[in-house]
Image (cartoon, rainbow over all chains, first blue to last red; front, side, top):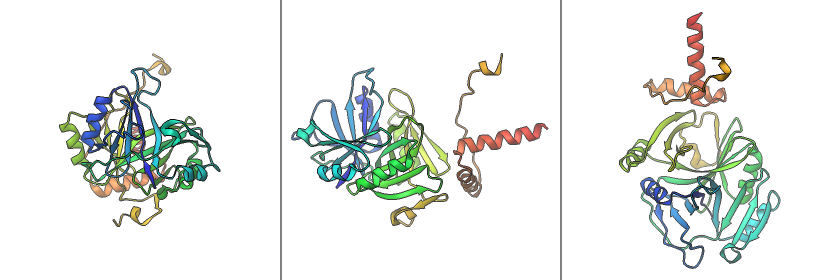
Length: 250
Length: 54
């Protein structure tokens, strides 16, 4: 089982906690047996999870994100990715961690599942690892080799989205030569209602029309590029559904 | 001032109400042309204004 769990690094932990709460994420209890540190918190989304990693103000990672996953099959994951990635085990979690460097140089990090449960307020919200890269085909191969199930791709080749069996989504978007990861979400509900909830919590956001659907752009703590919450696609013009659930019939 | 010295024209949000069928048609054409909605609407607006000025 694989759970998508993007990691957001920030010096503004309290603000991100408020944001995640308004989005409907629920904080998991500290994992005493595993990765518990004062700097690390995991939140449960309706589907998938999000990790929040505290860093010092001015740290190079402040505001950055990474492609994170949880899995109870670390050895199998490492084996599946060796054809496409440079794979190494590292010491966190008593050796229960795997890092895979993708062909474009971006790392994917896998940890054992965080123990504990929490009930999210928004079952419609899915956490999404957004992978921006000039090598869409290479990144797509990595996600498929990992065992994620392809869901939607664009006919133009600039977008691929997949789901994980343990929850959450990962997507590849064509981007600059320098690859990067972004924390993102998909919402399978009333985007306007979600926007109202965020605004009631004092969090700025805007619903904008994109060619593929609508997106809620959420003000990021500390400024910078907004966090994208994509409305689940219902109009697949220019896209190809790769599984039944993406075909708009559910 | 030389054009190369001008500050970039900032992007602002522009909300309008249009018939749903027209919105869908515009989105589909933007996909056909490989453009974002913003880039596509900007292209339409600039082209229209340029033609009007001729």
